[in-house]
Structures are given as C-alpha cells and as structure tokens.
Image 1: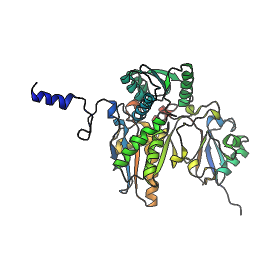
Image 2: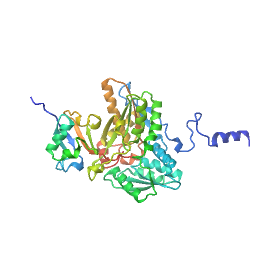
Image 3: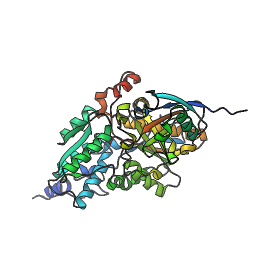
Length: 96
Length: 338
C-alpha cells in the first residue's frame, strides 16, 4: 500500500509568483521539505532552481515551517506533517 | 568658606566617578546606559518552574536597546581615529539606532545623517529631528534593504562621512557581549533560554556568544518580524541581504512572527503584566511563549530571559493599542513596524 504524503499550503513571495501564475498560496506534497520542493517544481517548473543551489537552500531564501526557520530543524530533511504550513521569503535587512 | 559648604561642593558638585557607594549616580546621560531591570512575568509565565523574565531596555538614555550599540560603535570609531572632531556620521536605520546615534553625536559635536525607510512611524522622524539628525528617506518598497543600499551609495559619493554600519560593525555585537550578556547572567544565573529580535543580529550575536561560553546548554532564540509584502519587494533574489554580523552557529532556533501575533502579545503584556512595550517586543514575547509551552509539555524547568527593545511611545500613532487586532494588523500592512 502506498504511503500517502501530506499536501500542505505554501505561501509564495511576490518575487516568485511569476512561477505560480500570480498565486500567493499554492499546495504541494511530500514527507520532507526536499520532497515538497521537488513536488513544487513539478507543479510550477523552474521553482526548484529558484529555491535550491547545489542541493541546498539558496543563501537569500528563507523557508519557515509553521513559522520556524527550517535551517534549525533539519533544513531540506525537515519532516512535514499534515496541517503544516510553509512560508517562503527572501532574506532582507531587518529594522534596527 | 564654611566647612559645610565645602562638604556640599564635594558631595554634590564635584565630578566624582560613580562607584559602589553611588551606583545610581552618573556623570552624564550616556554614562547611565545599561544595568536595566530584569522583571519577572508572574502572570504570563506558564508554570511556577517555567518562568519568563523581561529585560527592560526602554530604561536606556534614549529609550531603546540601541543606546548600547551606538555608544560602543562611536567609542570604537573614535579610538580607531575614524571619527574626528566635527565629523559627519551617516547611518541606515529604521529608527532606534539612528535616535541613539543622534543623541550621542549631538553631545560630542558630530553631525548625524540617517537614511530611513519612509514607511516608518512618524514619531521616529520626530525624535531623530529632535536630537538634531538630518533624515534622508529611502523608498518604502524594499524596507531596510533599500535604506542600506541607498546609504552605501551616499557613502561612496561622500567618502569623508563616516558610516558606522551597524549591520557589519563588530562593536555592535561587542556591546552586548560586554554589557547585555553579563547583566543577564548576573541577575539570572539560572538562565536557560535567551530570546531577542533579529535585525542587525548584534543583540543575539553578542549576548548569545557570552551566554554560550558560560552557560552549558543555553538556548539562543531569534524572533524575526515578518512584515507585509512591500518590505520584501526585491528586484531579484540576489538582492537579498544577510547582515555581515550574522553567524548562524550562535543561535539555536529562529522564528518568524507576523504583525497579528506581535500586536496580540503587546496587548497581553499590557493586560497581564502592566508593561507598555513596542511592537518588536510583541514578536519576541510570542517566540518566548512558544518556547515556554514546549518546555512545559516536556515536563522541564526553564528561566527564559527576553528583551523589551523599547516602550510603546513611538508606536502610538499607529493606533495598535486599541480596537480590534485585525484592524491593527491592517494599519501595519506595509509599515516597518519593528
């Protein structure tokens, strides 16, 4: 029996919406972040390359799983569960 | 002269160094920075053995934590010979660092020019001008990214101006390594978690390094404000920005907190503890409460210290302290609220 992978909501920043036909929020599935990104790239070709470089998250891309930066919870190996949400944002200077 | 007059002069008017006998006397405003109270939050702490402590950085000379970084950066630049009498200081800022620098610059005879995004609260401009700073506004789109880019351009065109550049100035983080960190450890030797906002990253890098060297297993947690879309309006991904000071290995967790949760927590602080804080503190409290909840679930104990960056005064015009939270969130859309 095939194990079903959760489909989750992903918030897309303005700068990447050219790949999603202008959609702010899309869905993709996978049991790890790497699988979700691969599925995202299947549904919206070109997206994978904008997010990854040499198999890692690009330096100026931040991905938050339920508001937590994935770099501190396994990066591309972070585990995805049903009901999770992902937010993708470019790294920008904070207020100070 | 009568002996009692001599005594009055020696007791009240001579510029004596403040010492252990007079810990609350200072020779000038800038000398009075730091040593801010660490206050327990009995009502917001989720359990008797999982306690929250807020460090009241609004008690600094200009009312924010940035007085520490500003003082360290200006002192370092003077020591290094970069800042000479009459010099002009240029700095990209969304408010607080500029305000701190402007106060010190005015006392020491420097001219202060701030490059600030136009989508910041009106009080920040008023305070900057009050302390004599000149403001050059950068476009709202791109937020602080745009302010940094614009300030770098201006700096190239005016090489005689001194840009202290808080995002990459080691003295910024050092201020917290030498003051904020030691103060927290002195007041709370049982500290298990430290939570602060992520902007220049100076507070987290300096305090984080200090605590990690001395407190085995301490967790250093970053709360990063998540703004409205206009602030992330980059031309392309490669125009992104990571402060030169940022060292990922110093922190253990990093959370992104939106304006809705930040407003909610600022109101929790007011309602439950009587503390009047600015919006970035709401984001930090939200992360601190999330961590506290995890600790309770695991059945562990914790002493969680976090930063109140500033009080709410300079956010009053945003109207976020009354009415519905949804309305407040709407008013903050597109604003650099932290």
